[in-house]
Length: 375
Image (tube, rainbow, N blue to C red):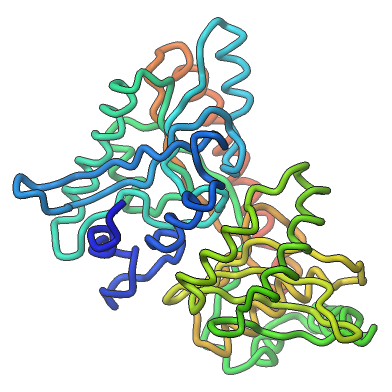
């Protein structure tokens, strides 16, 4: 993955201010997750990045893509598909996964070089994924957390469409966190103020660490939180200690650690990544448990940071209806799936028809129960 080439792709660097920068599509992030050993053949994430080049070798587009031997770390769940296909005598793994490893955040997946006909490039890349699926003789190709322009190209190429739901905060020009609170219903506003006071009442203070603040000692503290909580939630955390050192070296200005301190030491923290217009919340952990501290560190502090720095959105990761009461709104996320086997494709298509209806209905219900003042 040549860094100079990758930086020419729209959204993968800050080089083109007209295109929103997504830190997860940067060479720094993708190379770190691979070089650290988190996303490798041994972990079931073998890089099979798809490149589109002109006759003279100029890079026109690319797809971050992995050959997967399992369905872990994707956050768009197809375990049921795999189980059914394998019980019927099929071979579901390996499969192709066009995504950012361990990262349930929206972003470009069919990347086009800045200044080219991006629609045409995306169409070719969508067909290229189908060709790669055939050449590698794998069961399927999956493009997850894709943007709308990618979804259109994939739909035209015959991919099956899937939707899911996350919760995002939208900064509607607030000058401060109090301005945001003023848009909430009185009862909701009082509840959040009380929650925030309770989270910090045990002598806890909060630091925002980014850039040069991200020392190896700080990473040691955060990694202890991450592994402690991750081991209890997932059994085995996906990211290793070297990964955090590498992103600290390569993209420290794109990282925000929100760290809680008590009695002179850090006891909890959350890692966020900073795009040109979006703050992406990712992992949280703690070594002391305090009421409401998770909500404070992961959600309230992220909103404060976004408002103070003029970011338009906070994407707070996968799932979590508890985010709704804290000012995060339901948002539909999209993925696309190429399944060549006629029987499996037919069964998945039927399932997705029902699932889309359910997700859309739930999103509609939740949208009516946001904490904002009505009228």
